Image (cartoon, rainbow, N blue to C red; front, side, top):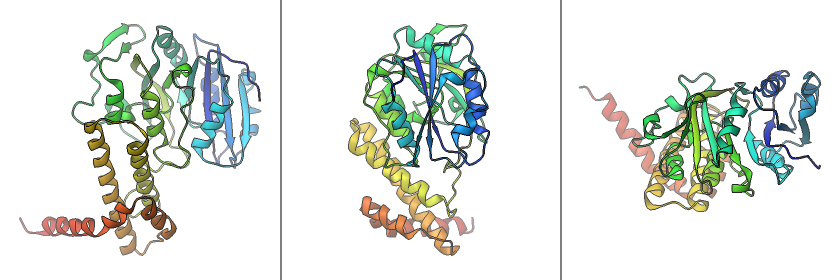
Length: 334
């Protein structure tokens, strides 16, 4: 499939079970103000509610949207399909989840920033059912984004130039960059792709891989996207729920990929290893909780996790002992 290059390509992986969601998202893109040199590439990843039907309802602007259909392979594979079909001479790339809604100034502000010579732009966004914007979320010491520490580029658009080591910042605070409020210069990292083996955590790995290569970075505290809940979000999976084991197993895989494939300094490796240790502990806790509740345990997933990361298996006993001691201390009279 040969596409004509536009200045910006907005890539949308799509898998929804309920009709109307994608059409609402695309209407927000087509309502962008102050910039019109863009195209949208939607990859229907075998969705039960076909994207083809959604596109028929768009009306004006429909010609900007290209649809690619493929058998279900996961969101990372869908994003990679979009990247594979992207014209090599497309200057700027942005992603958008199929249930998110963009503010009308997003594309214009992001392009204005990149036109000043910046390689990456990111803005603020709001997650559904989570209090505060991404810029408000709690952060480790030294990983907060204080506007006074950065150079103001454009007061009217609230654009800032990031000061400092951005890759180091992202190692500790990758969640500040939402999947739908980031735009980058394609020529900086044309071969970076999503890891299709990892389900939860694909975005974090991609951002780290991308940010190895970017030079100057611009950002804005403006909230440019309202993020939907998605069909397969694990973030609200508590211990013992039917989604807690896939969630923690995915994060174990994610941490190992980061440690194995992304160059980190000693301090950064310590940080990621600590995250890996916490996820091994959470895996044990989820497994024990489901066993006590006589819940349906996915033993194939458990076995696969142990094969991929034997340390998760060997940490079962010490983590169980640690939990037992914590419970004894908690139940001990004051």
